[in-house]
Length: 454
Image (cartoon, rainbow, N blue to C red):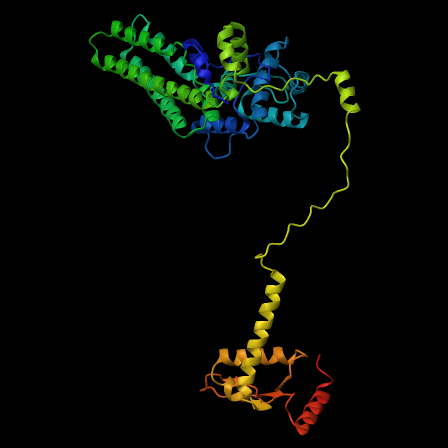
């Protein structure tokens, strides 16, 4: 199937909106787009690292942080003027759909009170009503915001603070310089993190990371800020250099954002990965894009096959003419035997006859025309010779059609200097030419062994 690059149907504005973050939802909306739980915990750990004194102090469950944000909404909607009790907070949270158990909510409220997030309305013991300190409110919202956009909002806030410092009637040069350097440091850190993701991350990771970077209008804000520095501090080279360095940092950051977009479009778009855009962006494309642009993508999409329409008359006609196949199978005729085709069974029989003839000739050579021969001396020459002699003699001794009998003595001969270091004496007897005395001796041996040989 031909590949379609999703980037081909996107104009420049669409490309810039690929990583656009979603808008802020209601404080009780649990469906807003955030990082995964694992990424949230990692983000909070790095976010709270400057404030903690030991490892493991950050919560492991993101729901506990979401509950604190929900407490802010509960408190702001409460109409009482003297604060809320723990029971009122707990019941209101449960009504708003918080899924944490009441026991866990109570434990969390006790912790928030001990840490100063919740403060008694009156400084009395067992007063029982609590209010939220504004500093705790800011911390909770910052913790929520950092997992929604990965802290990218801080760059915009830093620019606003720098602009506010420059627009004062008598701006402080040191304060402005500090703000400019902080903006540059922040841009550089975000740019290098994005550069690492482009070099090592997958398309899915880049999509998740890239959506946190709100790059719309950021370049213009930096340029306007630099122009403001030049107009307010003309001739102050230290501040002008800081403004120019901020522009360079923003250009480096912009290059990494474009590299991330390019990699996502190159890999995700060419492979028809529909995770490149969010459902909202697909909905916007369906509403605002032209038919030609949509057709360029939809022309090569794999869709479900259409339903098969069966005509009833054709089905009846097919059933009328259907005849089941016969279950009786006929064996095909045997191929005619060729004049030169080898017979495998005859070949095996011929090989057996040749082996039997070879063994008989070998044993007759050892007998040398006699009816009896001692095989011990011949077996002493080498191990292969001993093995061959015993094998041939045993094979012909077990064959009823052959007139050979093999007898092996129980005595063991040992000679560590000889080629065959140990063996039993063996004799070969030919029964068709032996005298009567030897025949009676063989019958006696067979009787002693327990019967006739088969």
